[in-house]
Amino acid sequence: MQHQIEFFYFIGSTYSYLSVMRAQALAAKEGVALVWRPFSVRTLMREQNNVPFATKPVKMKYMWRDLERRAARFGVPFDGIPPYPIDPNETANHVATLAAREGWCPEFTQAAYRAWFLGKQDPGTEASLRETLGSIGQDAQACLLRAGEEATKQEYLARTDRARQLGLFGSPTFVVGEEIFWGDDRLEDALAWCRAQ
Amino acid sequence: MQHQIEFFYFIGSTYSYLSVMRAQALAAKEGVALVWRPFSVRTLMREQNNVPFATKPVKMKYMWRDLERRAARFGVPFDGIPPYPIDPNETANHVATLAAREGWCPEFTQAAYRAWFLGKQDPGTEASLRETLGSIGQDAQACLLRAGEEATKQEYLARTDRARQLGLFGSPTFVVGEEIFWGDDRLEDALAWCRAQ
Picture 1 (spheres, rainbow over the protein chains, first blue to last red):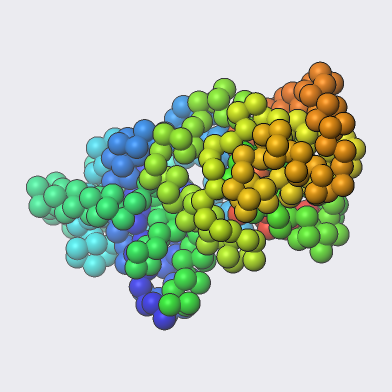
Picture 2: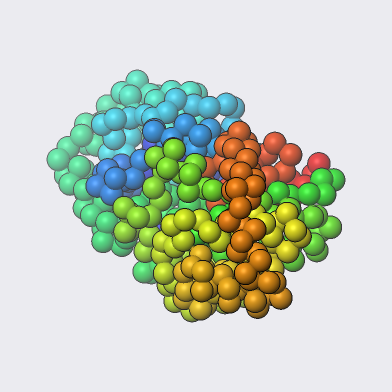
């Protein structure tokens, strides 16, 4: 059996909210380690001319309804449509990259998504990040500095390049070896793939 | 409990293959009637500037792999990538519209998809349609004539307009009352929604 799923995600992806809130516990139940990989799906989507919602109001309306239904089904809190899109500079993802390096990525990402979906804030603003970092016991000032360093941005770019090499095009994507599973609705499939290896 | 799901689909949609082959039996097991609704998703997607695969090779490559995996999971035959796209004039969908009116839509659609996915033919060519119609015991000549009549095309347009009013943007879409579920991977959710009503 495969014991690891790489969880590629982007803070700014709406459907990723469901995975961010439910994937860790589900994987743990199965004895599978979830390795959190923040990456710039926005960069890949621009390269691929893949605009999911901004120019597609019918599809976007559906997305919010589908997300609401699935959140209810999984017991993930949902309280109406949050701001969208958010974080044009991808700052929250730079912080997530730092967090992944230092071992506090899940709690940071979950707190950032709560600020976004429940607090109805853009989770990438400095004010929101200070609040989020403080709430998980991190030194906000120090983290923001380290997240803004060239080394962190390079790490983020490198991970994005790996995603590009793996054939990713969306968030969330679960990677098991070379097999990729796109969408929160393929989480169970990815876990089943692990069991079958 | 709701006893009916409207199954909006378009012969030419790749993922719809899975639903075409598995949805009827699954719904029947639950005592839910599947009402087959062929519609011009291509028209709606063009209106909405929604190009899923033609200009997105990375996403398209993933789609074929995802379809192959899910086909294996559901016991739906898959034997390599079929021709794509197909049927520029939507002739197969005109025949499906006639078939829906006359009560033989499921068997026609399933036979057309087998010709496409397993026979590796464009299922909308006259030769393919003759073979498909013959294989299900229909008078091919008569059907092709009736399918080409203005009344059939108008019916197809009217159904497409209903899909537009319901907020559809893709195929397959399962409609339960006013609730829409997009994707073969929402079939079980649509059935669960029926049970809950």
